[in-house]
Length: 308
Image 1 (cartoon, helix red, strand yellow):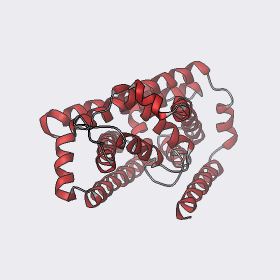
Image 2 (cartoon, helix red, strand yellow; image 1 turned 180 degrees about the vertical axis):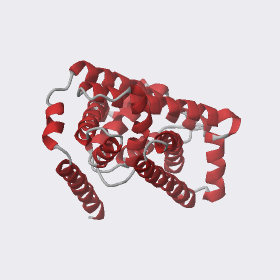
Image 3 (cartoon, rainbow, N blue to C red; image 1 turned 120 degrees about the horizontal axis):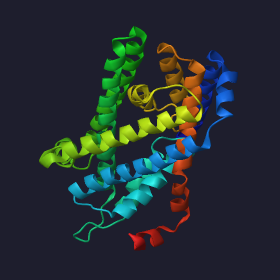
Image 4 (cartoon, rainbow, N blue to C red; image 1 turned 45 degrees about the vertical axis):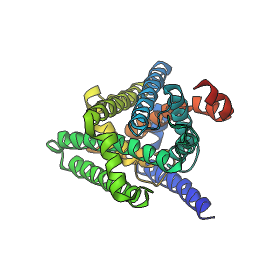
């Protein structure tokens, strides 16, 4: 019952924030841009999302391998698509991570023993933390780039980065406290998977690549709606907008993402309605790119396992 109430709250929250955002911007202008989207830019955005799924699967594969519970690259990619679709379709930001952990837990370690729920969950948590840490760094760099030109942008960006950093610390603390290995064991595994023997450089590079691909996808969403946002500005503001989506209020960031885009576009002297239109286009690209995950969902897991 509590889970259903939380899901309902997320749906209401997404609709509420989205409605408020449309109330404060020129809704007709935003809808006009959405009615004239260029298919070629949407298609390019989807292709960039495919590349991003490959990058994310590689990051998960690397963490799993470092912790002695490897999974095949094909399996990692298929399950990441499944997770992406679940996050887009279900009213919870944890569905995708939970599905990946559950499916990985059933597989076998090199010694023949099952990976187990504890280790699989640890791997997913550490992989997500690695990505969020680099996203926070990118958002911080973006905030610093904007701060010199506009105090309002500095305030919005700084609050977003602070919120994401707080979420990172909270997730790490909760995961360490609830780990079957204890806090010290969890920290040791985190160091081995993310820091030692050059792992930090790998995660910095691969997560930075993911952020850049998302920024390029946002730029494609802007071009699809004929919104004049330069590539440089897209690289600066997209991490901040993505960081706002970590707030566990909505479904797949809907509502929160649009509000953040409207605020940032307005503070940059651009049309807030254009920011909303670009954000919605980006959301549509993200949803379309996740659809292969529905095929993974429908395919029998036993068949997928035999192909791994």
